[in-house]
Length: 68
Image (cartoon, rainbow, N blue to C red):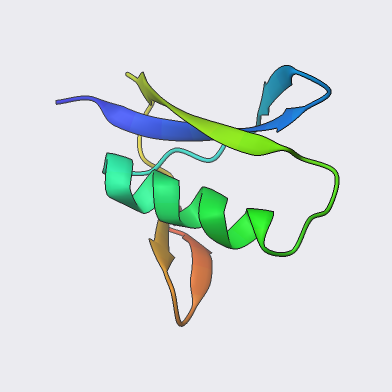
């Protein structure tokens, strides 16, 4: 089962970081929350990845690392 990353679109280019989430919905919500605080990005993109999940997202707690 794939995991998901989100990238912020700035000047027509999508930039990703190391955040990997378990579901597309979680990645979309994390991107939406980040977009609400940033002014430069014009949007975001969510893509599938085989990278291991390293974060979870919760609307009340934000992004949380799950690394031990």
